[in-house]
Length: 198
Image (cartoon, rainbow, N blue to C red; front, top):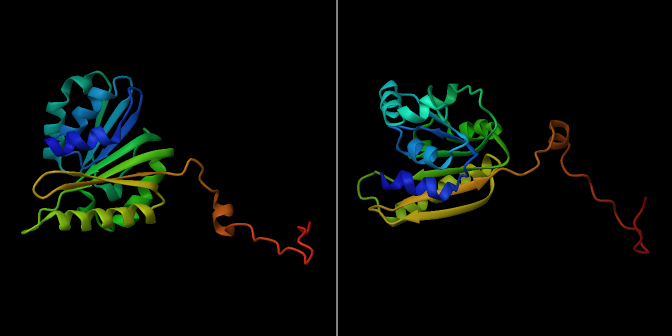
């Protein structure tokens, strides 16, 4: 569907990238990602065995070639052996996750430093409008920020209602546990003459 392929374009994956999609459904975005990652790997994750079977039929050739792998698991009980990934995608699924802020924080370590995630929402509530989509985008951006992603960018696809995609990046350097716990080094007070104490 157009929304999934649009999100794949925004994620801008390269031929050798390793990508994971959370909530891959029938495998539409997985197929679009596999067409771009001709020397990489796409892992599709979904809790539904029905969706995994449909995604398997749609991506049969890429699975045989070893370029696509499908995993049936809920996001809160996910274990993957293919880490780290360059990019991640979630289309209309984050709102259905238990404790989405916690889940996004848990998924961060699956990505390499500097890796990116695209999270898409197209509101389906009755009477949803462009304002509803904008509010959903703001909520996604807040979740990604809380999970440690930065350099956020938001895009909209002109549907009814619009689909919102928020893309975030992990920092290229992650602080170690001791460094993160200690926080930034305190700044020394300057001497009255303006010199810096040693």
